[in-house]
Every structure is written in structure tokens, then in C-alpha cells.
Image (cartoon, rainbow, N blue to C red; front, side, top):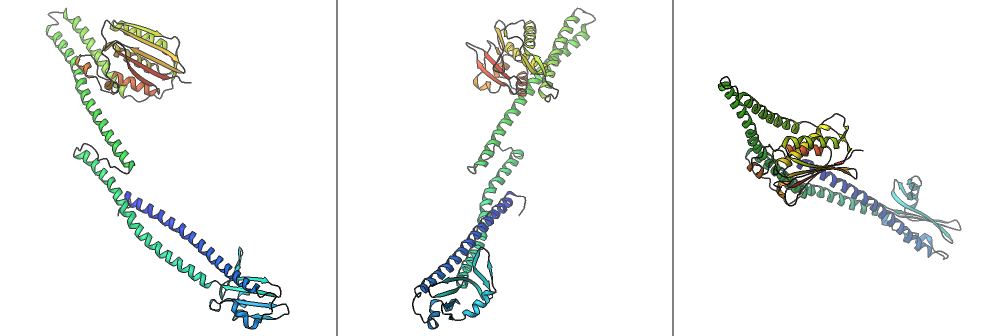
Length: 443
């Protein structure tokens, strides 16, 4: 088995956890077994002492009755010392206690003594007319506990073997879904499969497969937009280039004979070259990396007012502005110029020439709110989600032959995101669109 596979890693991890759990359980079992042995010996010693207590105050023939209080087969030992100085020993008790005197005990379990004769529970007690020394053999109880431990260990080994196979089988069944997912991903690359199969469980794999499929959808939509952009941009580039070449050839053919056509052709060439320059600049802005230069304090009010006046003259349109004065902002003036210009131009392009464009700029609760309202063709709810995607243009924009490449609003979105702002698109009644931009004012 490949040790780098998820199946091997998970099997190893689960078996390690399983072994850890078994180790802890066995540790608790040993503690419980030790407690059982100790309590068993203590109870047995208590029973013997209770029997001896009944003999207290009576005339007992200890020589013949000392052995009846203990179990000879368990190698228990008993010594009885009377008040008159007589000592009576049970069978082998002298030998057992001699060994116990040289034995060792555990500090927190002093009644338990380890000796050559074995492990004993020792208890001394004084009665009315005699004293007692009692030694209870722990051999039987220990053998019972040890037997239970052996059985437990055998069961543990069987559990590890059986559990290992079950874990391996379960993990294999689970990892097969991962392998299937990897295979399907490769097939998407090589065979052009549409989507991944979404498993019902586990939920994490369901979410991964669903997210991957969503990513595929978005990727394909982006690729489709790029294809459309190439078609549109090629047309936008080819048209001015063809016009420029046509006028150059016209000048070459007829310039000397008809010099009056040269100024008109030069003006047309200049106009079309500016279109090419603008398109190339938009592409560069769209792809450039985020600036690393420190931000500066800029006057948004004056920047927007300048853009409004410039575009009103350039497009010969009426633009009504409601701009609060001296609104300051931490940023780049080039970004704001591009933002204002692109969104106002968008309103101009998609609205009738006789209509009015409304521009507003105000500050409210540490936010700068910039809005542009037009009376144009409007944007459907579906298109509102896509108009800021790069290369995207609404169908009616293409049908109406409105100039543009679908890049301007993508630049707007990128600038707003750079400043952690928000864009809201709403319908203007009775017709048109309202673009609102919220920029957090830097402290």
C-alpha cells in the first residue's frame, strides 16, 4: 500500500486512536481489578475478625480451634496470643509470618506485604482476652484478576485485528469517493466531461464537489465572455485600423491631386487613433497590479467636478451635479478619475442624447456616497449581476451598436474593491439606472 494515500494515512490514524482507547480502558481495568483484590482481601479479613470477636470473653481451647477460623487451602495464617502469655499458631503460620517479617509493603497500601511466600493482606487486632495477627493470602484473588486480564488482552488482540480490517474497509469505501473524484477531474481535463458526480455523503465531499462544479460553471462562463470579448474587441480594433489604413491609402492615391482631402483624412485618422489608444489604456488598467505607492489625501469634490465639466463638453450632454464641497479621501487621484469618468461615460452611452445625467457626491456617517443616475435603456435583474464582469456587455448594448468593449465597468469594480467599497445598482423610474458607490472613509 502506498503510504502517502489518504486510505493508508486514515487507517493508520484510526488504528492508533483505537489502540490508545484500548490502552486507557485496560489501564482502568487494572485499577478496577486492583481495587477488587484489595477489597476482597479486606472483607475476608474483616469476616475472620468478626468470627474471632465472638470468642472474646469466652474460654476457648485455641490449640484445637485456631485453624477453624482460616482457610488452609488458601495458605492463610493466624496467630493468637492470650493475656496469660500463651501463643497459638495455625498450620504453617510461623513460617509464613517469618517470611512476612522480611517482606516489603507499599507506602499507601501498608496492609499488603510482598514476601517469598507470596502477597498477603496482614491485619492485627486486640480483643478482650487475646490479640490476633492475621495474614490473608492474595493468591486466589490475584489469579482470578490475572485470568480476567488475560481474557481481556486476548479480546483486545481480537478487537484490534477485527477493528483494523473494519477500519481499513470503511476507509477504503470512503477513499474510493476521493479516487473517483480525482478520476473525474482528470476526465474533465482530457475527455471534456461536464461536471463531477456529487456524492450524498460525507457532507465535506458533497460541498467540495458542489463548489468545484460551481467553479467549472464560472470558469466556462468567463471563457465564454472572453471569447465574446475577443470577437467584440477584434471588431472594435479592426474597424479603426481599417479606417486609418483606408484614409492613408486615400491620401497616397489622391493627396497630391486633391490636397483638400488631407485635413479631413488626418482628422479622421487622429480620431480613430484616439479610440485605439483609449481601448489599449483600458486593457492596461484592467490588468495592472495593485499600487504599492503610499496613498495621498485627495479632494474628491474637485476631481469629480472636473470630470463632470470635461465630459459634459466632450459629449455635449447636460449633466446636473449635486456635489458637496471639500470631501477629502485617502487614495490615488488616478483611481478616482478613472472611476468617475467610466461610470459617467457609461450613463451617457446608454441614454438618449436629449436626456439628463444626474451626478451626486456626499459624505454620510464615515462613508462617501457617489451616485450616477441616467434615463437610458435600463438593466435587467439578471444583467445587474454581470455588468461588472470583465468582457461582459448586455445584449441590447451590442444590438444598438453602442461603442465600447465591456471593460470600463470592470475597471470600476476593481477600483471599488481596492478601497473595500460597495456597489449597488437600482432602477430609475420611469426608466434608466442608478449606480451607487459606497467608499469607507479612511481614518
